[in-house]
Length: 356
Image (cartoon, rainbow, N blue to C red; front, side, top):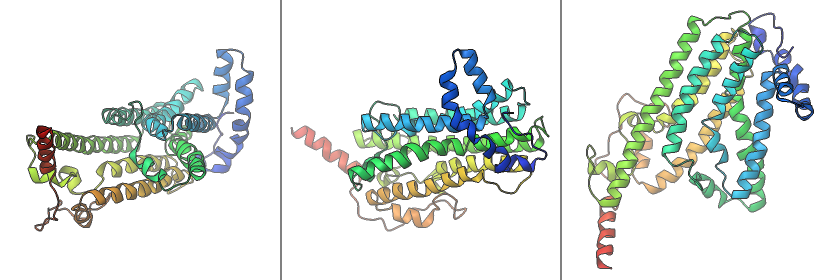
């Protein structure tokens, strides 16, 4: 069988029964694929292979592709371009495989609906910021690269950027979805708990949409202000001169979008825990690793931001990084640091152009 014949809900998270017996399929998969002579043969291989092993195999194969492309182009944001797409595809894969295997799929379909909404929203946000433009790269990679020698950077690319990140996308999405699929043997139809978790996930996606929208509007207004020194509608000069957003959800959390992103995948893990009637399991590896990744990347982002904007340190004191520290939003300190305002910089630039 491509999936284990578990005897209880708790066995759905038993690694020795649901994963370990299928590892040989992972090793045999390349040979089986090469021996296939038709699409029908490939379809047979797909159905007969444990869906978790298929997903893991894809994540490993993609890490090799990402490595080659990044080294050829000297652009290390290849996984970034896949970040909003692959987790959803892994979950859709579980749902599609369940159909082909004749297993109950309504519950995993519900998970797929939420992940598709998440994927559409995040992909759109990444696109409008220019993430898919040729040559676009996360500025943080360039900063890190300055401090890492060539050979060590290549090793870092092989291990973390290409391999670990690719497998991480599989771990926090496909693994919980696989566990939920296994539990459908005992509860084939959508339960009240499934509906509850679904709406929590949708609410978190909605909060990401709001926070990213607020950031987008602010940055758009700020760059317009920098360009023509004209104050956009609905924005105060002091807010734009500050250089970073402190209104809306950003008045309570320094990174409300990052908080929601971590919560989304932690809640999927919790969904799997509830479905399998367990408090915790090895499936937490994905969401915990994602949490650690956000800790490191957000620390670097804030180190860069605090170096650019003097008021950011005060913002850090008042507002929590992810979780709100207070019900009161951020308040601008009365004593402002001495800074050259962005409006003044724009005016100086205009004067220089007139003198030419």
